[in-house]
Length: 244
Image (tube, rainbow, N blue to C red; front, side, top):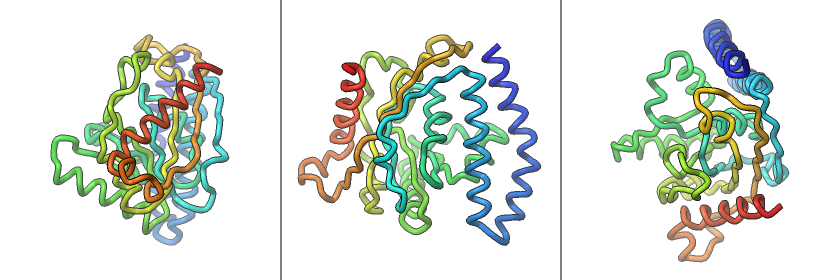
């Protein structure tokens, strides 16, 4: 029943959302900040309904570490589609996700993702990948939009065995824009769906937000390997969660 309700709601929302997206387009012609605010609240509300139907119970730690007055780069481990659904409800202000380019093939959903400043990364094309990162830098530096990235590059199908190596280039957005990095340690989201696919299970998950990291203030060697540095921070956060 959880699976049916969640999928049915998502499909209906995307279809009805065609009308709302047109309304938002009109609003954006006259008041772009208002359009962005309404779109953010609408999607966060929809994700809240999906979490309710799915029986997700979340524990959130350290959200006060997210600055209120500046954009950031959220950097997280990745084990489930629900990482995005839950995580997007916890961000402060406008935020786009860096997603794989294959998401562009999903009708209706891709429109909402573009509306919310999401980017689509071509991992096979270096030139196109660079354009995507440059767009992310522009969003952060010139438009005040935070970005969320999963440096593992894909969902980790064996999260109990540890994280996949972080892609070093994943932190370029923070490096070039100067924004803080917010490390995010996500626990147990794979138990919602991926471990029981295609069925959704009632699950308790934890999202832990670490203290902001300014790459410019790291030691030279840590700046050189910023991806590995932030991955270690997240690993330590996950370990502390396990020991708690």
